[in-house]
Length: 229
Image 1 (tube, one colour):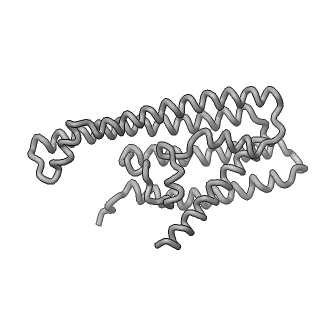
Image 2 (tube, helix red, strand yellow):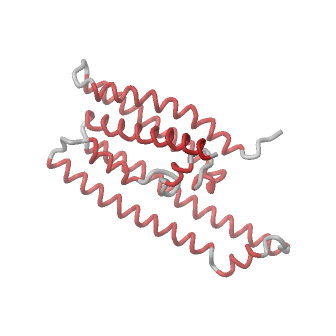
Image 3 (cartoon, helix red, strand yellow):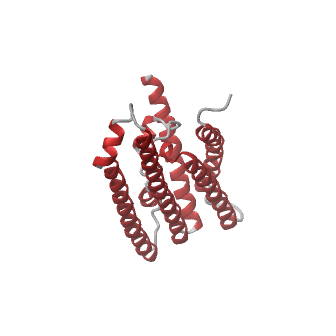
């Protein structure tokens, strides 16, 4: 029997393996953070950073593949706990969250790095605001009178109305896919800018903080859901 939701089931399977690898990378990152004196320090840091960023790229690529098939599910993914879903911004983490991780985990920014990070923060927050406004316009369009009229009659639609509703859903899917792609693009570009500003040692600290945060809220969220069920 064919799977009811193949795109979802494929992503859930991918996510399980991806999170296992995320824990492995976190252990490696923490080992570097907690052992400041070791041979070939800079080379080892750069190599691990490259591996971790490639690991995240795999995640973004699988999300994009899923979005092509079912973009709506990514805005409220059933594979996340209710707590994790409450933290989502346009189907993922808010880019400025990474900037807050820099503030909390890196204490030795130079004056030049601080200026560059301030510039990244300004650019990122403006882009976040623009995308949030775009999403709001999409949501408002769903409540437009012609669409509402079609939705209210969905239980007893005529042939022409079915065709119109399908067209509306396709337009909505296209708009949501555009927002999703822009939001993931902003997430990726923000991380790249942060890596360019920070030293390898500082980047390792930030990547460790991000991974710890993600894995902890997932563990806590799943525990909370199991207690409430």
